[in-house]
Length: 600
Ligand SMILES: [Zn+2]
Image (cartoon, rainbow, N blue to C red; front, top):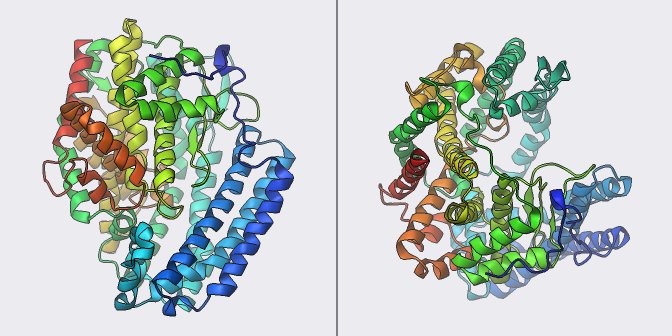
């Protein structure tokens, strides 16, 4: 197997591995000029097309979409350039100014272009149908059809305007209050790192749940509850108000259930989602089995909540050049073409891997634009985890690259239900390869436990979260106020269903709902993670079954981007969402991983 060519030898922590943004835009001054030009073009589009959509024909619609795609490309490219620059040097004033200019321009362009969507939505179905069926717009057919799915729930323009004008006070204010409380909350805590008692934020306390020291894990969670306790009534009130508002809006917009807007956005039928969550709940026993295995490994009779993410074994160090070689080998045995696309990130300096002052944390893959290549940011710290992160982000990268090559700018992107499929699939490819070649027992143990626990945190825990939300909305719809006490009861009951008697929940975990941001920002957001993860496991089972015959279909799936709904894209790969047993291969994969872990 060839190594990932083009990677300069790097020292520890990927020293010197910085990206080169110059192929996107040469410099900040050029970015501003191009931004202004794109904004002018958006305004020109508005003066040319406003008021004309009702009388447009197929070729006219195709011309308008082509112009929109070009504007989208240019704005995305310049905006990505600015945000990528800022993400590796958040302190630079030039970067901040450019990012702010971009944000302003995007709002202005959005205002100029919004009429087009609204006029398209306002068309009667018998006018719209011949238009979206016109051969000239075949490549954007799904985009055009899918946009109209919100039409029956869209109000008149003055009504929509009124709602959006009042949104800062009715919605954002409560979200901001929640954010302020949870992000500024600090609890005095001694993490035993020699610094004595120090103020700890929620995130900092939660990071200790992966500490090898059991007492420290326990005390960190207790400190978290100490910090949350005085705030839970206010946090519950934020949630109660938001849920009340969402239910009222649902009534005005003619939605039948509180999950309908989310299902519509994800393009998934409610029955499929409900069937999936039922199936997940039927398989909680897989988690119970793992919790017992893990208790045995840790020498405990039974796990307590603070043991859930206790590390098992420590992975060995991996330097960046080895990591890129592992990625190349993992992807290469799946498909040389996929490895070639991943190799492009290394060769063309489209990865920024070295952690340094002023660079943002975490990792992401930026699609950039349909006419440019994607970029990856990560913070490589020589851990085996970082190899998985690299695989994950490159998984997104190959999706963006392949979809951009085949689709228009308007049809390349996918919704939330499928966005995490290629990234999770890429992690599974890397995991399988590592399990075949890795000989260090502690590294193997940590790889396996992280994979198992990662799957549980996504599939099981996110289902618990969605069930909790369903009950909260139902209670509020019946007229019940969502008090901290009621939310705590629902939260604890749903969690007990998951953990069963395999893991002991402390009484104070009743407050566990209170700091979770998804409930506040976007309702029922979390089931899309479950869907994506289970879909990926099902696809991986197909790959195991069909071997290399699966590869071309998978590449076609990536290349299709968002040009079809999720059910159609997955169906072409043998994952039939109408089959009630569709998720069984996914659970079998999870079971298999627990067996591997059990065998050590
Ligand atoms: Zn991702």
